[in-house]
Image (cartoon, rainbow, N blue to C red):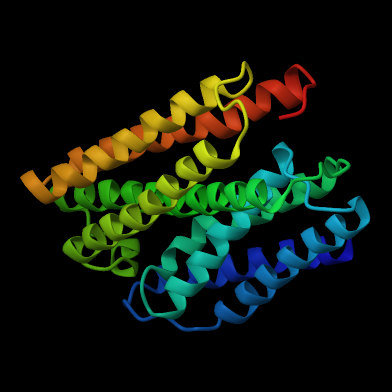
Amino acid sequence: MTIVLIAVALYLIAAALLVLDVRRGNGKHSRLWLLPAVTAVVLHGSAHLVAWRKAGGADLHFFAALSLVGLGMATLTSLVGAAGRMAALGVVVFPLAALVLFGYHHHGHVIAETLDWRLQLHAWMALLAYATLAIAALLAIMLWLQERALRRREFHSWLRALPPLVELETLLFRTIAVGFALLTATLLTGVLFVENLFSQHLVHKTVLSVLSWLAFGGLLIGRWRYGWRGAVAVRWTLIAMGLLILAFFGSKFVLELVLGQAT
């Protein structure tokens, strides 16, 4: 419990320091947020390791998976922010990571299901893909907000916390490309390693994941072939991410929390 509370507090401190940077509105960013953010990430991961040791393995039920995706998002945000790009993401990501970590701890843990290395590889690929593409979805929202503010000539202080529009758009598509590659690997390992992939409790997850993969792939092709950008890129990114959320967390929520079945 102590580890969790400290991690939650440090996430919120890091976010608060980033908010202060944004409110200064001078376009300069201190690195004061980095220490609490990195420490929170380490403690977040440690909380899972401690729980897994007690459970006898890695549990990947609804709240655990949600917390792990939050951990992945916080890790990616810290890495990108440390490089001097998009630290402002932490204003949203760090409180979100704190929330899902607290939810994971508050709702307890389940006995871990024994998985061989192939299924573990598939599961970790999936979680990393979700975390990366969730960052892409946040970048898409920021791109939309930035474009709308510029069109309306509303020069808010938070605009200075974001990179130029073209750079933000480039970062969005690079993130989508990485996430798409990870999602492709997830689907391939699912086909190779998951027995009865189209069983009753997996068919909807599989179909929605494939639809999301097609949407992200179509967006990347449209960017390369037709130069898609702006509102089109934002719309496709959010639709594809919505399908992915329904595929994994939507199905896990219904099966585990509503129907009480294991997934």
